Amino acid sequence: LKPFSNRKIILYVPTFRDDRETEYFNFPHLDVVKLHQKLKELNACILIKAHINEGDKQANKFLDDDFVRTVTNDDLPYFQEFLSQVDLILTDYSGIYFDYLLVNKPMMFLPYDIDLYEKERGFIFDYHENTPGKKVPTFQQFLEGIEIYLNNPKEDEEERLKIQEKFHKYTDGKASQ
Image (cartoon, rainbow, N blue to C red; front, side, top):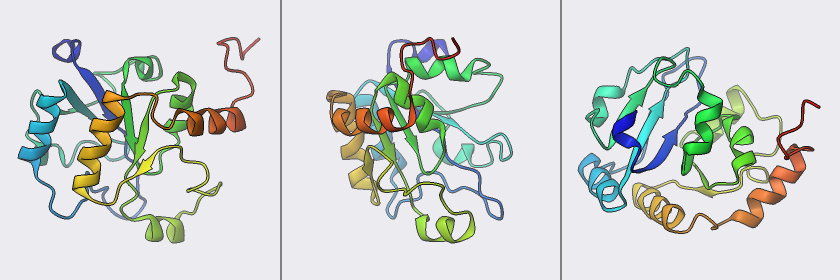
């Protein structure tokens, strides 16, 4: 992952679906060229970490290159430790954002199939009350959200800290003690 060391890192961690394939960046009017232009402008890259049960079935859709690349467990053997290097996390419903709350950095949610997901799998907590970040239904809002969060990591910080306090009793790195 050395080619990304001088860039802002966006990590996309979608959730596994039991009966269908996860659709990466499932926006109407997705424009991969515009996405790459925005990432170049922001000196950023997106690393897609597919769920272990799904693999990287959709990787070729995004021109696995210097701007969007799929990564595996082999690429990120210490995945939890890598989170501190990430500037923005993207997910739909993955609980990874609970861990990411501990680094207090921006997160954005892509709940493209929330009604179906809620019906099939459900949520333990109210999704909207416990996801501290933008929920983006369109490609344009997605691009705008990336720019806002990478240029201003403090955006939505108060909301993140509120959710962090709700789910993490210990945040000083000594929880196991």
